[in-house]
Image (cartoon, rainbow, N blue to C red):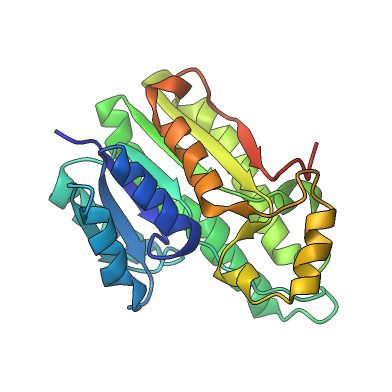
Length: 244
């Protein structure tokens, strides 16, 4: 019987790559999405090509009742959740002087409160099984900060504190909780940047290039595996050396 991995925001970008990478490792996959999108069916097909199941559930991670509903659906479908990847996230960048109150709240609601909402539903399942892996996607800006991203940086810093505290709470039940802090990763969000901006970004990265979604997914694969069975409460930077 395959293990089950649940990835929030799993239809595109880093989330999709995480789902595909774990599918290749033989995990049955559950992905969450907020709104119907063209990528959903294509993602499902790609995942199922690895001879594993893919179950998609709709809902907004910032809505507690939605999370109760879709986690229940995943558990009814698969029986359990072995790995949870809290990946769903948004940005609404703006200097604080110009940032609207709702732009700050929206980013905190999805990125940080969303991580709480989903994890809150999954923890009892893992506690009962006395086993589980929770991997939270943070960001280097949660450690370093970044001008124009007070909302995003605050949400990602909150995820790091959440990760470390929860790791201490559930270690005795053999549940490992870690975070990944990506730097600049090639995604749809970075694809829209002008070429000269990308070059400027690369200059400030010791490896002189942006990362790929696969770089993050491979660390999720490691943290999901038995190879990481003595690692919990950690933040792994996947940033080409940006933060040392």
